[in-house]
Length: 255
Ligand SMILES: Nc1ncnc2c1ncn2[C@@H]1O[C@H](COP(=O)(O)OP(=O)(O)O)[C@@H](O)[C@H]1O
Ligand SMILES: [Mg+2]
Image (cartoon, rainbow, N blue to C red; front, side, top):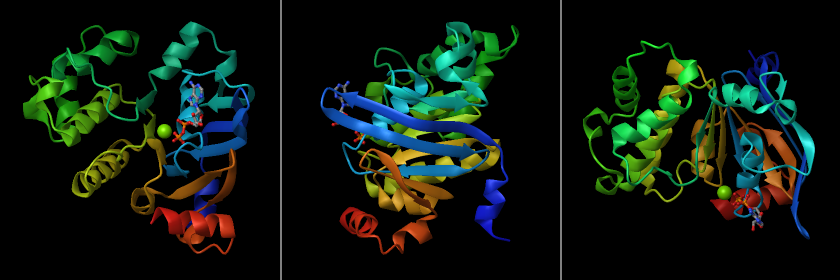
């Protein structure tokens, strides 16, 4: 069966429509659109400085868009009050560019932090330590529980950050450059972890990257962010075979 027609029948869990964002004369996003389907790995690829992080920050409410709508699991996030937004946020995991661990907290405390922040999502008698251990086991780091971030390698930090994202059992995971700054072998390990997590929890993932290799391995579908818009959409195979000069140059330059 055709994979694409299969996917198009799926439920849309996240939708961005006509997103605009400028900083003074710097028009970064000029009408960007995307739809993320339940259970898929959607990769947004764009060169450095094209607005990928800006897009994801608008999505999680860290930045205010100039125009456009963002719908998450049928809720228009611009219309939600603080409390409703907070509840929805607990269903969205966000892996920041870099790892953004709290340096003064141990691995355990870093993982407990989101549990405390979103305590409403869990029952009162929830086994917090069990959740922390399970999240660390998912990324192969159960024995690092009492280490401090300064004692971890770059790859381990990224894994802990991923565990911290997973601990809230999000339905949607947003990854901003999950492999950037890592050596190729560690990058590959992180990609494998992301795939395992997707399979285990059937999460829907939006993966922002400029890493062509990462996109090739992990994407079910891709959107190319060029000139502030969703310039092209398709599978890796389709896009990398495109004759469009902008798309072609893009793949050539990145490889
Ligand atoms: N807070 C900000 N203030 C002003 N300009 C910003 C801000 N954040 C991002 N930009 C600009 O927006 C553009 C896109 O940035 P970004 O989304 O970080 O790119 P990338 O695609 O590499 O993630 C860049 O030109 C950047 O300088
Ligand atoms: Mg970025």
